[in-house]
Structure formats: structure tokens, C-alpha cells
Image 1 (cartoon, rainbow, N blue to C red):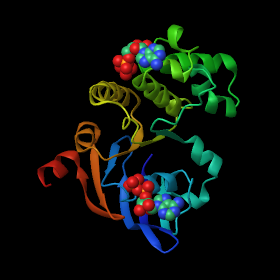
Image 2 (cartoon, rainbow, N blue to C red; image 1 turned 120 degrees about the vertical axis):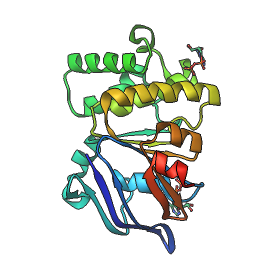
Image 3 (tube, rainbow, N blue to C red; image 1 turned 120 degrees about the horizontal axis):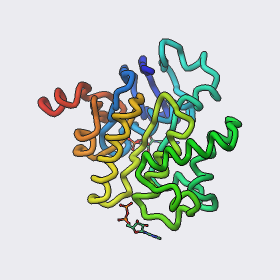
Image 4 (cartoon, protein in one colour; image 1 turned 180 degrees about the vertical axis):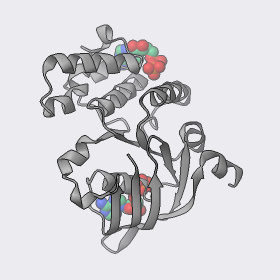
Length: 228
Ligand code: ADP
Ligand code: ADP
């Protein structure tokens, strides 16, 4: 699925956090949004799944304005992976991953197959990890469960907000490598927020550099790295 932002703007009272942005996130590509803290990255992600409403402009998903897409269908088509706080501490790994499929009323046999398949995909042995609680896992393992949960209902689009930001540098490398392999298999349209330029170069097909709510530069990772 492709996503187009047209003159997209978000004001918080009289502060403009996103200032008339025009962008396309291409089908099956991983687009990185990078820029300093406060430049509007998270605000853009949250407008995509309508956790917040835009002030003006439009968001077009596969040719259709977001206004003409039912919010439940919209959220169903998008997985959302965030830093740290994503998992419910009182629920097992299995139940955390099963949240969205259960909302969608999949039958339990199908859910079990899916949860086990996803745990394998993120390199966590299901027979060991499905019954654990988040506190019994390392930070890196929790983040992998977060990725599995984001993918649970097979969304077309994955929104990722600094998913590896809270992980120490060595384990972060491992997670990035694992995630690259996963993306090769699943080929989702991904919008990935980070403020780590090395992560952006490693993971991104395309890079968007934001500053104070505006696009400073946009292009393939190679173009952006060659013309910093
Ligand atoms: P980033 O993700 O790039 O760090 P954000 O999108 O979170 O940036 O925030 C962009 C700007 O908007 C920041 O200056 C932030 O302080 C401001 N902002 C974010 N959310 C709100 C809010 N609910 N009310 C007022 N200002 C906000
Ligand atoms: P990762 O590469 O997933 O970040 P770590 O290197 O941090 O993993 O942890 C290595 C091992 O230590 C993991 O297999 C995990 O089972 C175990 N471990 C880490 N933290 C905890 C914890 N708080 N409780 C139980 N086991 C833990």
C-alpha cells in the first residue's frame, strides 16, 4: 500500500508541529523519518493511524483519502510498534500477541498458529517463551515480542516509532539484522521513526530528513547519504 501526504499540517494550539508536508511512502518500502527531537516524527505517525487528527491537508492511502476510510478498517490495516511501554505486563507473551486477532474474533486455533509462527519469525522459541510474562524477558526479547504483536493480524502497513531506541547498542544491532530479514520476507510498507542515522542507513530504502515540521531532504538512502 502506498501512502501520500498532501500539504499535511498539524497545529497544537498555535504551535505548528507539522508544516505543510508533501511526501510519499512507497508500497513495500521501508521509509525512515529522521530528525531531531520535536521535529514532528511521532505526530506524523499518529496522524496516519488517526490517534490524532490533522489540522489541514490530506493523507491518501492507496488512492483513497483517510476521511473515506473507516477508522476501524484503517487501524486493522496498520500495525503499530513503539518503544518499551508497548506490552501489557499482566498478560503472557502469547496473549500480548493475540490482542488484535482476538479483537477481530479469529478462532483460537488460527490464533495459536499465528502466534507460534510469529514467535519463530522473531527468533523466540514459542515452546519456551509463549507462557512467559514481559518482565521475564530481556529488553531485546520484549522488543521482538512487540514486533510480533505489530504483525499479528498481518497488516499491510507497519508504523514503527523508535522500536529499538531503548535497547543497548550491541543488542540493537542484532535486532536490526533480524528485522531486516523479516522485512525481506514480509515486504510491508513501513514508516520507521528514528533519530539514529546509522539505523536509518542500515534499514531504510528511503530516508526523509525532517526539521521543525518540514521536509529538509528526501530520497533513496543512497541519494541521501551521498548528498548530506
Ligand atoms: P518527534 O517525534 O520528532 O520528537 P513530536 O511529533 O512528538 O516530535 O512533537 C513535535 C512537536 O510538537 C514538539 O515540539 C512537541 O513538543 C509538540 N507536541 C507534541 N504533542 C503535543 C501536544 N499534545 N500538545 C502540544 N504540543 C505537542
Ligand atoms: P537479547 O539478545 O534478547 O537482548 P539478552 O542478551 O539481553 O537478550 O539476554 C540474554 C538471556 O538472558 C535471554 O535469553 C533471557 O532469557 C535472559 N534474561 C535477560 N533478562 C532477563 C530477565 N529479567 N529475566 C529472565 N531472564 C532474562
